[in-house]
Image (cartoon, rainbow, N blue to C red; front, top):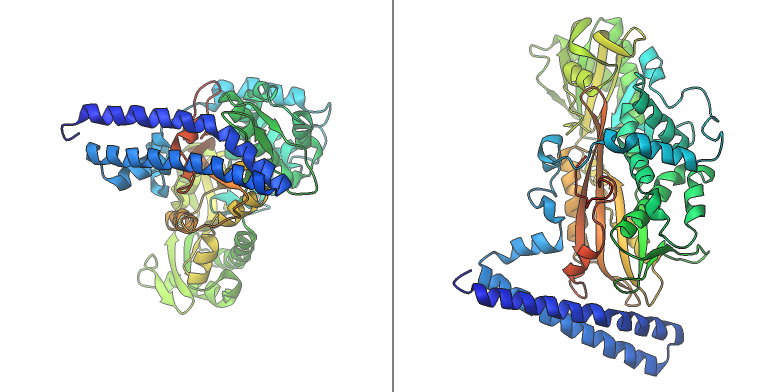
Length: 542
């Protein structure tokens, strides 16, 4: 430290002391703000400004001391800023980049099997009697794929039927989890990566919810009695509350009103409200894009099978999916077999195509579940851990067997859309979600925001999404009536691995307001919500 270690640690002690003073002052600041927002009285305004200026002075002194510490340490300021202000400390090395969030680069923090049986039992005990038995047939399983009635279509690594089930979402979650526990071969491994992990977290932390105040029981009952499309958001709110309680925070659910109101109130280390927002797994644009590609595949499959063609057809679009000339594309893809090198892409006005041929019958490396990641990799080169494509649509004749070592008639369409407009729409920023959350915080309050979205896009799209969010956040403006010193952007990466084993990576971007935020406040709240091993601090992993 440039010969000044004693000075460095003296500065650190001063920073710690000032932060404690700031924490002690914060309840008075919060009370003064609420008083003024209610009364609009001039005296209350002056008191609010006095308290805020005192807090601002402390923050400025803290920042000045940290700047001097940075100079003494010799560590570049931008490195310290990234370490302290943006990212979960356990994941400084590439945690913002998609390629750094794969199985081999993220340490495992817990095994589902260690907690699953007990967690599932607790959730089943909390559910209404006979509630689980209602519903139709086995729509939550992969029976339609195995029978050949349906093709498999993945977009952003997600199966639409698994994300928007025919049965109630919570019923699906419990049944899929039971299938995994019981080793059912038609287990929906595409939905299981999210659903099984959520059931484990909910069941393992029900006891922590007992310490949460407010209408917690009605919030839990909403999982069974509320609408299906609200289950994931309700689960997120419950898991945030349970995680905060486990982290030592005194929290309660706030009464719901017709007016805007946050989800939780936290009473320590000083009064704050907490708002939780979840982005649906697939946007409407992504769903429309998937439908267009599914329709194109069905026409392609018919033409390919009539000519005895099997294998993977590649399509890189340069126009939006809705505008793609389906018949011309199918014709060009089919004629690709006549090219001197079918596996080398040929370009057209709307994109490019290539063809990687397979035999009618293909032996797999080993016995595996039908449509498992191992099967998709062996047949089509589809990497479920880090997809190289926007999506894949395929159908394989597995002779109605849920577990196979040989398949027949495999046909797949692997597709990506490279058009500027499609990339912009697919790389949507969670900023709109952040804005919605800010609007729920009542004037005069200090707020904390938890945002969550599911990520599964190819590397370029996923990285562009985070880049867009962070660049736009730097210029974000909001009402002066509220204060949001810190926020958490929770990114989930669910995907099956190997023979269909559920796996979930969680990576959280931690945000601190440059104007009135203090990074030390981050340590007072949980960073990991979905993958934390019960009873232990969490970090991204599975």
